[in-house]
Image 1 (cartoon, rainbow, N blue to C red):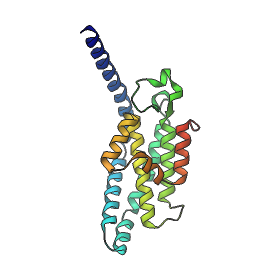
Image 2 (image 1 turned 90 degrees about the vertical axis):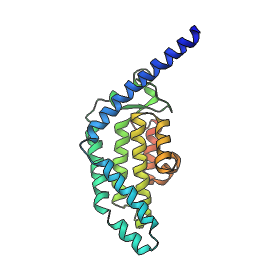
Image 3 (image 1 turned 90 degrees about the horizontal axis):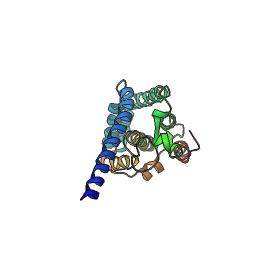
Image 4 (image 1 turned 60 degrees about the vertical axis):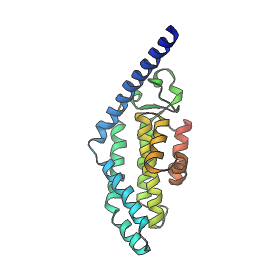
Length: 204
């Protein structure tokens, strides 16, 4: 009985510590997001792209996609604003663990197992601008496909920073019916390469 109670106490303490740690990350990111309309723009685009895909006629699909140009440029601009704003934050506060589960304050005792969220946001800001400007000269449908993937990956990164990698994976699959690996394969080549370098620790 004593062992069981001790284990239960450890689990409860661990969970409370995780919640406190995660609340700090959520508050920091939320403070910056509150000044922007990123989440609303993302919802507009993801729902709009789905509506365009469901249109039977190609001409109608293109017409619907063309109607989101202003929102696309807005989301790219606001992503740049978020990345720039986060660069002013303390480096230790923007570290995130690369383990699948939450390990509170991992940046203090296992810094090699963390990465800089600021660098990740920079990757997303550059990637979104790259796709919005259509530097690869994709067709409107292909461009919308890649831009959706960029948005999904960025959302995954925010959930990862605020909670954990495992939680981010679950939320991605639950909300968008897609796995992280598939999203990574669907973003632009430039984003994918930069992301993989960041994950490997080559970009800090």
